[in-house]
Length: 88
Image (cartoon, rainbow, N blue to C red; front, side, top):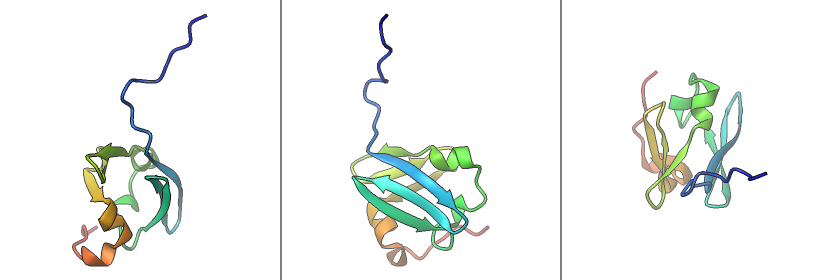
């Protein structure tokens, strides 16, 4: 029996580990990051499957295509440097 291999080129260096009432946990570049809904409001009312659908974009960017959200690792680590937030 031949086993089906994963899609070639699939990037697994980023994934959402979990969501709780305050925010989400993101694993990116072997580091865990907490993205609070206060700092990252786009995720608060998003469907769970859309929150978990994250893709690596470029060298240090991350994209949630269903939510039209793009973040950089610096923006995740230092949200105070990027004060503009979506209005919900």
